[in-house]
Length: 328
Image 1: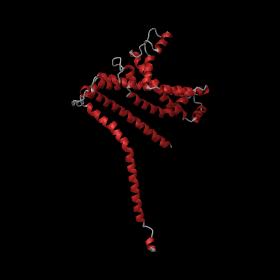
Image 2: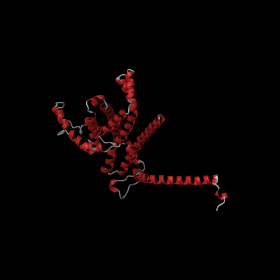
Image 3: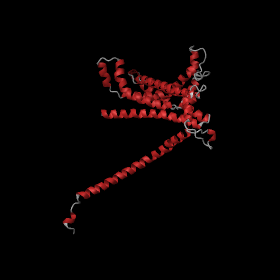
């Protein structure tokens, strides 16, 4: 039988030592779990982003050709970048990408998205029980694959058998068919129309969700204070919609700037190179002319511009989250 002295409680230092060892064990297990959880995404990030980026930058400093892949390319330094940035064709491509494809295209989507969001959220549609069917119809363009949408619109805009030209001729608005995809005046509006039709629903639904989260008490208080509909729009609706508008502008810019499908399948960057944008320019230089080194340089420039957009987007999102946490 043990004596009472041997049954004494452990000292405080022993307890602290055991707790310390247990804490270190828990921390090591947590670190091991984090490493195991993060290893697969980091592996894929390195394989499919970091390595291709480094490889592309390396190629951009050579004269690598599609027809001489086995031989490889000779080192030319920044000659590809100098040729690209000093080219009048590149300035045209950059203008088409920044102004027509991105600035005009995104602006049209945002403005039409706002107008449709207010219309679909109006009391008139609810009164006539048209709100639900209108929202269902809105989803149809969004659910249509871009390739299918482009094929349908090319048929609609065809100068010989297109339904739009037939309608215009039938109404007497025009005397002869319009080559919407072959005339300088009409070609960019036609491309932007196709992009807008296919992508507008996402913008509209985002704004509708933001509108439906607006407390009705704020609108009623403004109306009681004698605010006109224009003042309610300016001082109640738009401030509430501002975060959604900023996010959609940045996201739409990010998605549109590097878009290849709509321009290439609609016009093939033509007529000539009239609608050539950065994405189609990279494709043409790489797989039509075979200049992989030059194409890589164009890709690096494009990626740099997109990185700037991405940093702006992340900063806006971070500021928005900090503001929401501060309000809570």
